[in-house]
Image (cartoon, rainbow, N blue to C red; front, side):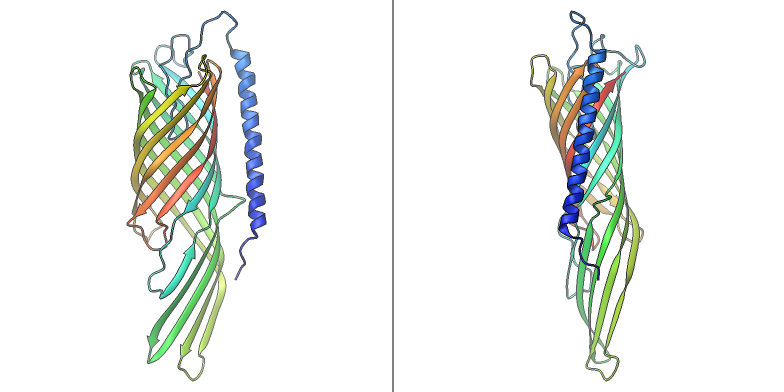
Length: 340
């Protein structure tokens, strides 16, 4: 059976990915600062309105007063638009996984995983609904090069023609997973408040291919001949999982500087929905929280950058055997927001 990956290799992969993220963060912030200086109004010009929260990442929208007439719009007199390239370094971990049916004794473990997702948010605030923003976000990424390793072991006993058949099996597999996240949110600012209502829906698609090895040993007792048999061979499994959820909650933003250039924002929402695993396995339900907290910095009236930490928990119920009872997604997210 294939041995587990050395821990040092996984740590090196994580450190390498973290270094790459820091480089991306530096480049995005430097670009934002440069563009902000290029488009900032001259001294004595119009005073910029507080940063708008129309184009936050999925699950988080910073709340601010509606834009003033000094802010540019893509479609004059109709709406203001914002585009926000962003990246999410996502850590995935799992709860307990039930044993396979029919096992007298058994165990299985799902290795933790991490993804680097990239994409963008597009938001619109229509002049006819100045207190509400609509945000559409799409992210895509994979778990390469630091893939999760799953292990399982089962031992069972059965009776055949007066003899006892003892079977033990073990397997190890490496997971190659790609992930798509799509989210649509409506955000409505509460009058005379730093808070907003959030509601919307989310779609996730996980496409996984597991490759590894399996070993099965069978012992028949008592017997006369051919009492043992052993199977050793490669395994491969492919199967997508799609998750559909709706969510709702609150978001808030608090200025940290007198000119509103730096602010603290956060949100908390509840989500509920269902998951569709590969064919032949029953659907199951998911519920849980979705929360974020972070900082936003305004380089100019049309350019801001945000850095946050986001965490989601999916509690699975009515789940089929072999699926964990909960999944945790968490990690830092960075974005740069451009108003047009």
